[in-house]
Image 1 (tube, one colour):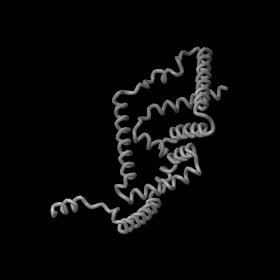
Image 2: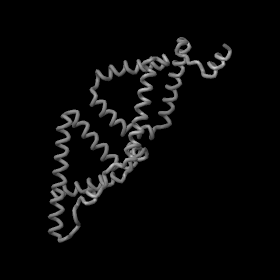
Image 3: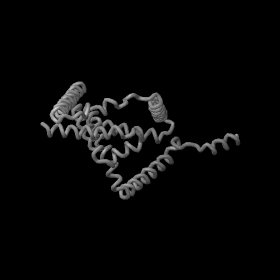
Image 4: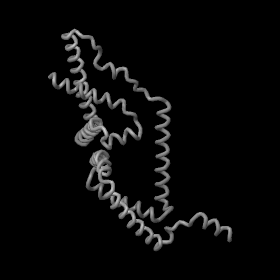
Length: 225
């Protein structure tokens, strides 16, 4: 029992280290590139267990069971520390004092910043969808159609939760694999990119409607008229 509570204390200490991790691009890169194995392991393990549980049970059940597990752990740890302090006649205070005093309030500036970033991404996404569906560039719309066609097969093979789990695992594995094999992967990617560019150029030549008239050329043409 004592060993389990000590393990819980170690986990809480690790979670305490996570609270000092700032929510910015550098901190996210640190997590997915496994700069600190302990922090990345905690986030990856907790996230994967939660997603697998949600895929097997309802969200409400997963939330209830995880909350009960956390509550049981904190109550047991609280009782254990109280008994230990009474036996050893020490006065260390509340074992969760550090977390009780932690400021969880979101500042107005942070909320506005997050909202501004979200709105910018939403506007860009809707503009891109409008451009693709209304065929501003026929080649890009054809590419989009091919991607949608591939997604019909992906949807037939996997359900949405499986794709979320695969995406989560890929987030914590592919960046590190790329970092360790960057040179060879870039070589193959450049080869594929050049082939796709070559094929796209041939299609644009075969389908003139896919070509965009340069702005300068269009201006000179209007002046001649």
